[in-house]
Image (cartoon, rainbow, N blue to C red; front, top):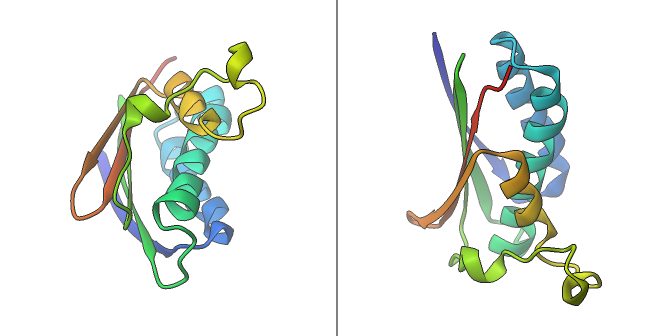
Length: 138
């Protein structure tokens, strides 16, 4: 079995929790492990959505964020598309545990995403897209 969903939300952080709940529910349907449903997915997706809303769309009220969900019993693929110009993934990826970065407020979300998901990709497709892949780990 395979589930594919596409959501479009206003560029408003109040919608993040609803999107996370939809994704968690789909993964629960495939009996994904508790840790992945309660930690990996919610934290990584929340970070990707908040980055899209706050940084990509610059909190513009008329902008939108699209979320594509593709889940099977073996893996989850999430794509978060904003209307921004994009960013250099490697340049923005900082290790917040390094002494030079301890007081920085940026970069923590990407750091968490790379630690909680198996693969993170960034590309442009009529906007900025972050694709996250999580393999089921039992």
